[in-house]
Length: 231
Length: 215
View (cartoon, rainbow over the protein chains, first blue to last red):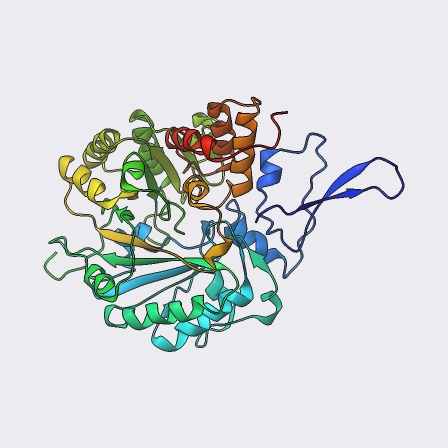
């Protein structure tokens, strides 16, 4: 989040300086407490009543969101696709992780992205925390009381049909011009038994950069999901 | 959750950087998954990871392997980081033989991961996830050389300012490069930080930054 502490002089004790954490910029990730960096152990985590509570849910990797039952910020997504069949042939998983890497994002920016995607046949992942915080899942509108809250990263997760991918990516590009932070974008696809990766030609045709390093499901989970009739 | 996907670097740099996850599936094979996850962790440990941990308990730099194993419950997601492809091939051969039964995910250069699978006698990658990079106000990002270390912890627990402080501490003689990387490894709770790559990157960073004072 950058340098979020401020040095101040004590108003009653001459010469004494102390540090305060800027609570507006802090996302309650808890790393300063776990790293035990304060030599006099003066750091503490203030109470986080609602709606501030959402900051730690989306920022502190040790906190598990009960809706997803996964610690961290998102869902199992493609990690368990070999047994869950979440992303089937002809479908593309698309994730937009606001605030990443290391910048942080307000939920009002998350709402901008979600509302751009909602009308385009983008199916929000039901177990994702951001989907849970939506007041209207059809429009992507988030609850008003969390819009001024900030998280280290907040993932809008979902999937669409392969033929909708160009429109979804264009919507994400539009949203990127409206937000006050950054986001990373990821796309997921089932690889065919012949090794064909259906999204690659689409990305290449449209001129989108994609990484050489990827996240790869090995297909070792059991019981294996039956993706094809002849399996 | 894509905390091992968006690692930044070129092919030469990333070819020695692999994160292996073991993940049971909610509603499918999560009940009774603890012994399978422990077996998966043991197989990984046998093959010499440079980091290993679970998000809730910590990693081998801030706790012990015994502690991590003892805290594995049904549904625990574990991750191990490796620094070369030979270890990945050996691990995949073990996984093919023992088949713990939970989902296994490897983040790394996709061509190399596919080669490792073939060498281990496994078929094609099952499902693949690509990063399309960072969009939006990219002027807010730290420098690319800092990002290479920062993105090794996808949860952003190794802040850009911590990396800069480590550079200053090494330059001022307060820490060795190895000690600085150990401190960063402790912050990355789930064990995705690759200390072997981290040492290399920090050494590359040192000549790029100046400190105002050596004291």
